[in-house]
Image (tube, rainbow, N blue to C red; front, side, top):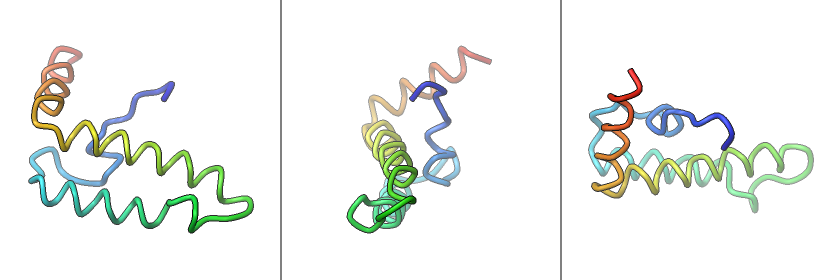
Length: 77
């Protein structure tokens, strides 16, 4: 991603979201934007959104990466 978005924003969850909330939000987006569910003109945009959601989930579901994200966010402000 050229412009790094806030992973919480991508998944649509608050910054204090639990692991279950993060997982539920990811699964909802994964189903909505999965390449097999989107064909034609919408497929390209859906694939981008699917990859964004996957990246966000991978970062936020790992406790170590999640704390790194919080640390880097605090340093950038």
